Amino acid sequence: MVTVARLLNLTLVVPELDKKSFWADPSDFEDIFDVRHFIDSLRDEVRIVRRLPKRFSSKYGFEAFQMPPVSWSNEKYYLEQILPLFSKHKVVHFNRTDTRLANNGIPLSLQKLRCRVNFQGLKFTPQIETLGHKLVHILQEKGPVVALHLRYEMDMLAFSGCTHGCTVEEAEELKRLRYAFPWWREKEIVSEERRQQGLCPLTPEEATLVLQALGFTKETQIYIASGEIYGSERRLAPLRAAFPRIVKKETLLDPAELQQFQNHSSQMAALDFMVTLASNTFIPTYDGNMAKVVEGHRRYLGFKKSILPDRKKLVELLDLHQNGTLPWNDFALAVRQAHEKRMGQPFHRRIIPDKPKEEDYFYANPQECLCEGTGCEDLLDPRKSSKLQ
Image (cartoon, rainbow, N blue to C red; front, side, top):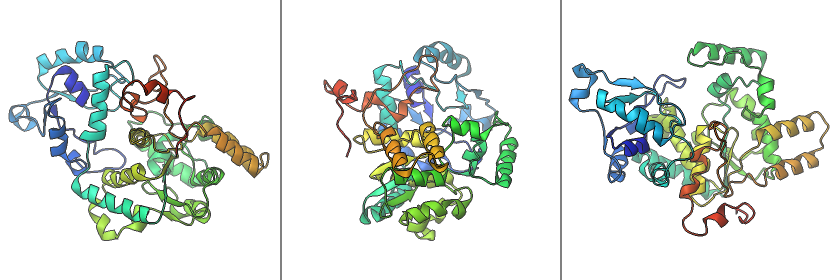
């Protein structure tokens, strides 16, 4: 949205956050991000204000024109379709802002502005930064850290329809939740079909086997970045048995320190975000928004090691191993081979014309911002890229 405001030479109002989603998080933008820094750091590119002037406020009877921009749109759409609306309405409220700008085909200056906002303009509040840095320090004192983004939470399972490993009662509960949210279009979902297509998050049990196959041992310190795991300790038991050095923010920090963030899932996620950036290795069990943004940020920080699971291939291997067809050593070798080139190495973003949802997400691999000068092509050529540490 900053980039769109810059393109159209418009003033941006500090974003409002959704408070009606599953998590019902009451946090405002300024509860998560340092607003003064956000405004000041981008002052030379775009004018940002905290709130609308009084004459455009709903309190004074003004009704802003609301609309969702078309997803994955290019600059032509914004210049020809959106800009004229401002002459007529003065204020336009975009009530949907996710993935509204194309991944590719955007001028380099605007792509670099997207990176500047993401990597420099957005800074967490001092309260989050202070506690996040403490969390990172505690972990690093104990040795190398693997951050496991275990996206096995109730909302994820309900809306993806993924119930592998759940009881019949749990599957029914998740289905009821899906039907309770009218804005979620898909209601009837065949879980096993979705899993075979690689569209489900890895279960805690699957993640355990994958981590072992990748060579992680009982000595590995694993930080679980997530909210409440569905099925809680019962589902975490195999992971905990294989990796006794499992920790999470709730076990590392005093409850009093976390008190101010309770019932504010976005602020809790911000703490996890800081750990995932600082960790030695990052492993997401699902490629959702947070996982993609962490992946891209770690590339920006010097192509830090991120193991990006090929879930479709893993499901095939896991099922073969668990039905006795594929012995452990062959399973482990196949898992490692499948991920040799999925470690966060430099590579060009995959472009699929007319299918932006299926191509690589800009923020997962903002290649325009990862290198400068003549060495870029060498860096982004997988045949010439060096192995990651």
